[in-house]
Length: 459
Ligand SMILES: Nc1ncnc2c1ncn2[C@@H]1O[C@H](COP(=O)(O)OP(=O)(O)OP(=O)(O)O)[C@@H](O)[C@H]1O
Ligand SMILES: [Mg+2]
Image 1 (cartoon, rainbow, N blue to C red):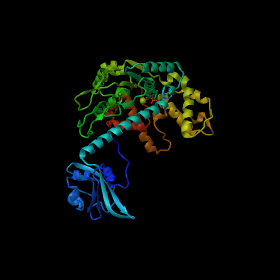
Image 2: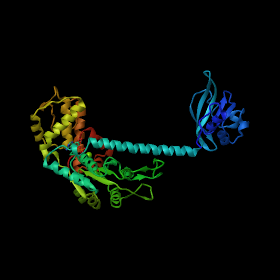
Image 3: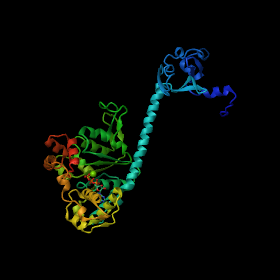
Image 4: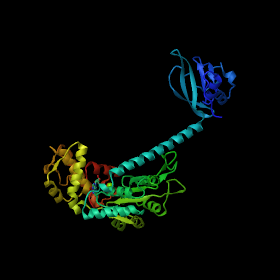
């Protein structure tokens, strides 16, 4: 027999429903108990008949009802022999006047609270996973093989290499100078692969201090180190399970982490920091390098076994100077993109622009071209992109716009840029070593490289 509908005239019926709400208790303004349900009496361990008419603090010494009588604080916490509980307080009104307070419990024991907290964390985790998937989907529609502009033989063979890599499930290493589009290539491979619907998780091996790389990659168990989260944390390898893990700038990965990465790639197994058991993962790995790894192996800065393990599918992204015929298409593409972004309509491009851009050798590759066009669009007038709007010439290499600065600042920056570029050259582009040479922390070097707009030398 199911639950029968409430007979509004029968108080017994109300009792049936009220008995299912935990911890109902109601008092008048003096704290005299006017009502409590059987569930509440049982919870407090009192006789219901005797409790009625008694003072609430005599029956339930830990109550917060009295101190809450005058204020309207709807949710309160209390302590009881069962641990922490949570109650809701509702003022009882009659003819617009407060005559008492009704309490019912949301949580009656700590375990429920812990379960609630666990479920909440799980819920947030799931939400996060879903959001991440959505973001990846959005990113996918934004950047994919179709966004790789160019019809030069070099780009056509790059696109073929991408398709081949996407059909396979092996590790890919993408080589190319800075700004050539390595990240775009990695996204395209994931996007065309059977893992496209799963996560593409990115980690930059250079931005993280050595000690953090390991826990970022493999996660950690609870109590692995001071400041570690109570329930441990998944690493990027686990987050990318069934999907793709993109490790940017693998050439900067420290020698101490390399064997752990090698193991993960060979065994499809990882171990969290401070963990005892191995976790099996099905993660496809794509890495990039803007340095010749073979050279690094020769110099003892990169492990040979890891090099071979990564080198299953090498993809080389050509520098822009080797495919200058793609420049007009790229200019049009970026002109379109930035006019939209900057709210302009460019209807005509001065044809002289192309010749000029094709004479330049583009050390910063497509990213530099993109910056030049963005700037030009910002300067353009009357829907016309003129050759005069183009500002070329190692602007990035000599640093930021210095016109508006005082001469002392400008001189300081020039010296700073020269020193950093020199140090990077001396250290073959290795930032950890360059930072040591300059006697500054590595993160500060990164900041300076960014802020001063330094294009790193190609080694
Ligand atoms: N062929 C291309 N067509 C269109 N856009 C491109 C192309 N190549 C690169 N880009 C764009 O140029 C910018 C730089 O590309 P990306 O970040 O992939 O370079 P990268 O090789 O990873 O550089 P870095 O080594 O400095 O990290 C991005 O905004 C990217 O979208
Ligand atoms: Mg990159």
